[in-house]
Every structure is written in structure tokens, then in C-alpha cells.
Length: 213
Ligand SMILES: [Zn+2]
Image (tube, rainbow, N blue to C red):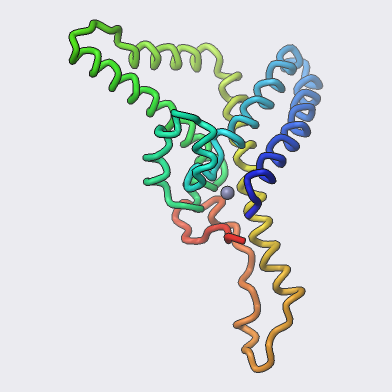
């Protein structure tokens, strides 16, 4: 699979393509043209945040964790629980939204711990987790279109990563098929690569995963 620098480049490069495409599609629709600029900006930001900060490689790459600074600890349980290089980290649509939800719940957990410690020392603190939850729910209720736009950018940012992993995994197999001649006496079935599986992109129960190259 591509290394971090390649993944980062692909994320930024694809956002440079996706953003104007989003703008031109929305600005051509009379009902949506008013907020085409805002939607394009939201897609640009969420696509890059998803690909670079909320990368599918948070399942095992500690260098991605370091991008979070001290907040890397938020991702330690995720790394321990999520199977590596599997649908739940590298699949399409659901996994990036799962990471967003996970991050939200971890923030609430941190607030809860801070409140509990403050209460232990007799400090009166407002119920921050409830306030934050109400604030987020109110924002989602008041701005559903913007939230769907952000979610779309989030999904596309992760999809570029996962599809690149799949293409490189498949590319390695095809390279072996084309350039590595079978040894004499080796059964054909032993040298013929299995077909390039993409099942792990869609199927949570698949045991397939992208190949490490
Ligand atoms: Zn990956």
C-alpha cells in the first residue's frame, strides 16, 4: 500500500479536483447555487481532515497518531479494538463516519473524566458533556444540509485512501503476473495470483484485506 507521503499527496490532489467539481455542479442547480461556495469549502476542508487527520491508517500507524499531539491517546482504544487493514478501518462510507462518531464520544468521555476529577476535589463545574451534546445536536438539526456536505467530504477523503490501497494491492499482484515468469515444474496454480479482491471495501464480514507491499 502507498506510504504516508503518497496518501497525503493523493488526499490534497483529489481535494483540488473534487472542490471545483462540487462548486460547478451545485452552482448549475438554481436551488443550490446560493450555497455552492460554502459547500465546496466544506467539502475541501472535511475531505482533507478525513484523509490526513482521521486517516484509515489510524488503525495501526503511530505516525498518524503523532499528528494529534497529546490527543493521540484518544486513538489508542481505537487502535486496540479495530482490526488492522480491515473493513472497519479501510472500508467505504461507514468506517470514516464511525471514526467521526468515535472521536465525538471520546471527547465526551474526556469531559466526563475532567468533571469527575473536579467534583472529587470539590470544584463545581458545569455539565459540559450535556452542553456539548446539545450544541452538536442543535447544529445538526439546524444545518442538516451542511452536515451531509461535511459527511460527504469525510467519506470521500477516506475513500481516496482506501481505493489507493486497493489499487496498489491489486497492482502488485498484476505486476507479479506480468513480470515474474513461473519457475519450471511449479504448478500453474501456485504462480497465478488470486484475483484482486475489493470485498473488504464493502463487506464488514470479509476476511480479505489490502496487501502490504
Ligand atoms: Zn491504508
